[in-house]
Figure (cartoon, rainbow, N blue to C red):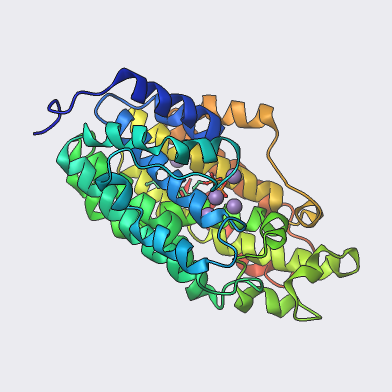
Length: 355
Ligand code: PS7
Ligand code: MN
Ligand code: MN
Ligand code: MN
Ligand code: MN
Ligand code: MN
């Protein structure tokens, strides 16, 4: 065990913790409450993937040299970790840019982790970078192709996170080997649920970035002009809402497997780490469902509600109560004549029966 051979530099951990609080309000709270033996591991895992995602998301820095971006994505698991003092300048904005400028500090903390943890983080970063490069090399102005293609993108950017986290939970012995056995199935779905919620919510933001993930198999059924941007026009609002409700219904399909995954968890802090983002996601989906504001701005759950959910998600019973509540909320807002109403109803009723 290499745990103590490379001493942590307190300043490096401090940098990691500070920048975490700046780049993610939502993950900072749930990561910081993790037990020793997982807390720093997952902090580093988060920041490595945040660095990779900053490269993926930058639609300006690589204009005219797109090949560079793909190389950076593919090499991110390796180059920063093998070149002393590696950093990147001019990619990303604000605190995410600062993260890449100081990335060698994250690397130093990484090198103080057990080799087993390093291997998990490195493997997931490599596979995610490969997947991101596949999609970043495509024209995504009109979204992904079909639901299979959409699921594949979500697998690369979020399902793999669920897989890696599951392996870290088991390897730290805070959770049983069963969690790792579910890593590629239920663990993957845990990530898909978060990512699908994010993509569904970010319709407008992603459209403006010229890179969207709504699958054509879904949105073209509701489109008059064959251009995804039409949903932002008020004259197409009726169709836009039908499309949105289809996207929400598709995301809700993840819920039974997510509930099954969370039943496997035994450690209270690991449970909260996993469950809180899931509860925020279903609360967000309930807010998005049939909501025209998705097409005019950003829909975010009220701060007060987010704080309440964070505080109340302490047990499986509380988790079930929240999922039951939001499934009922969606069920009661299904509009007359919605094309997916029976599917939405069926999934909500199933969630209610499971909780
Ligand atoms: C390592 C905790 C718990 C079994 C940066 C947590 C961005 C939704 O970019 O910041 O603002 O639109 O809102 C997180 C499964 C991944 C999936 C993915 C890694 C749950 C790089 C989260 C975070 C697995 C690709 C953040 C997937 O959303 O996005 C760690 C179990 C990063 C999890 C990205 C998205 C995460 C995301 P943005 P957000
Ligand atoms: Mn965000
Ligand atoms: Mn991204
Ligand atoms: Mn992003
Ligand atoms: Mn997004
Ligand atoms: Mn229950």
